[in-house]
Amino acid sequence: MNNLIPLMRREWLQHRFVWAMLLLVPLGLAVMLLSFGQIEMGEAMAERPPEDVAAVMGSMTIVITAAICFLLVWITSVFMTSGLARRDHGDRSVEFWLSLPTGHAESYAAPLLVHLLLAPAVALVVGLAGGYALSLLVVSRFLSLADWLSLPWGHIVAATLAVAARVVAGLPLATLWLSPLILLAVLCNALFKRWGLPVLVVGLGLGGVVLKYVFGQPLLSQALARLGSEAATALVGASQTAPTGDRPSALGTLKALPGWAAHDFGEALSAAASPAMLGAVAVAAALFAALVYWRRQGAGMTG
Amino acid sequence: MNDNLVEAKSLSISYGAKRAVDDVSFNIPKGRVVGLLGHNGAGKSTLMRAMVGLAQGTGGLTVLGLDPCKDRVQLLQNACYIPDVAILPRWARVEELISMMSGLNPNFSAERARQLLKRTSVGLRDKVKTLSKGMMVQAHLALTAAIDARLMILDEPTLGLDVLSRKAFYEMLIDEWCDGERSVLISTHQVEEIESLLSDVLMLNEGKLVLSISLEDMDRRFVALSHDSAVADAMSAAHPLLRYRTGPGPAGNAAIFDGAPPEHVMALGQRVRPNLVDLFVALTRKPELDRTQF
Image 1: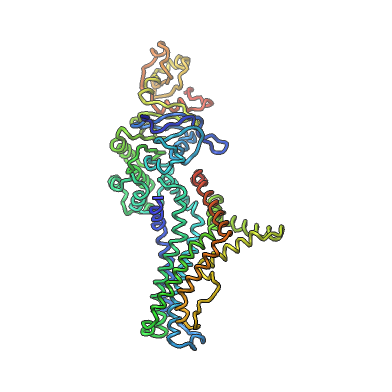
Image 2: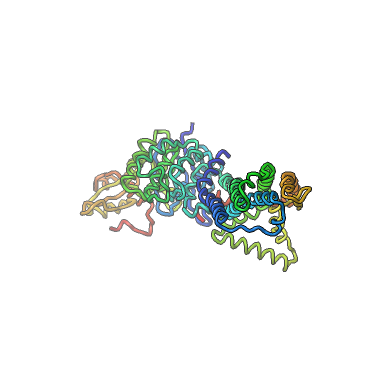
């Protein structure tokens, strides 16, 4: 596995422009809109004390910005990953990559690692940093620079970092929950080329409907729904409780967030320690083995 | 100690019902430059891909003492390979490819690659998608030749290169890369260009190995007689492998024999060195196409 780092570097070299655009364009748009657009406060906010309003504005800006950056890169990465098996066929460089001394398994593992874990995690960190910068714009435009400077930064930083750490820690779990679907999409694209995703969608959709309504067996649709919901709660919200703290104030919530994040991750871990997760990992392992077999057979070159 | 870098024993490779390589056996010792000749679809590329673990067959095949399929990664660190569709990733810059190959192959010399690229019109900062086909081949050849390998497997390596670049590449290959320990297996349809470089030749015809011989043995075994058209019937009666034209006029005829023909036939013509192309045609022509009729 010494080749993992160079292969991961390949992903950076190949996709850095896309990732940069995915992060810079929304951040740039946000800066433009916040600089020149109109910001209105709802009635509920107007009733809050000014320091509470500033704290809510600042922390929400940070969280929303980080979430948007993370989701944009994560969803794009999942979509890009689905074409992994045939991505070098477009420019016909597949023969070049196959002529290099890299194993078939690591040739899949490195991009999966980068696209499904590293890129979204880095996007979250970049989003967090962008969020801090945007919070300056939001709070100073709506209130004042002094209000931004007097924000409870200790609590805000602790809370946002805790939530970010919670999402990053949950990302591998979410990826594991979704791995059967993701790898099935990769395999379908490998076998059916451009028809891979339509075949997958129609196959799963039709299969679920037929099983449910013809055979009275909703197993497939239930399994798909379970994978989706488990992946979502693996990222955040596994505990099904709100981090309000003792007082339902912004400061109270901020203070409660680190503890809540740790508890929430514990719940996500508990949910992962289940036969369903074992099943998902087993299916994903089988699909990964099928992909390696497909590449080893040289189908990548002739197909 | 076994000096063979490649050993194939009864190797067969099939794609579904089609047998691309059929019961092939040969060895490639170290220090040889071997030409792999065959018509389109003869199984050359399949055989080469099998040698680097990209095609699986039955029978025995060891390359550098390794099983190409099981030990592909280890093998490709010591054997470099240029496939017949040598196309580099379009999104990369040449220097990025050098950097990536440095990370992926411990026997790759980035310095050597840069030296070789200096001889071409390819710049390090050039993006592959901006290179012409010939420049891309030059870049690929430079990257491959910068690997300190024991075996180089080249499948139509100079496709798209102009004659000067082809000549420069072959000169580099023989003068700088080959050191008496390394071997090269090269497949090309431009047989005339590489004939003088080869030490051995393998000829494939519809998946079967019809000839595996050194050039010295080839000269000894096959006899080509240049003759006048007036003795054409007598030559035909001696059942040559092939009769062909070598030039204009009645004297521009020749016949190739496997082994020395009878003395009275030898007396009818003048012995000349058998040409690799003509020998290739003689051994791989389809029987239904009678090329002995001028």
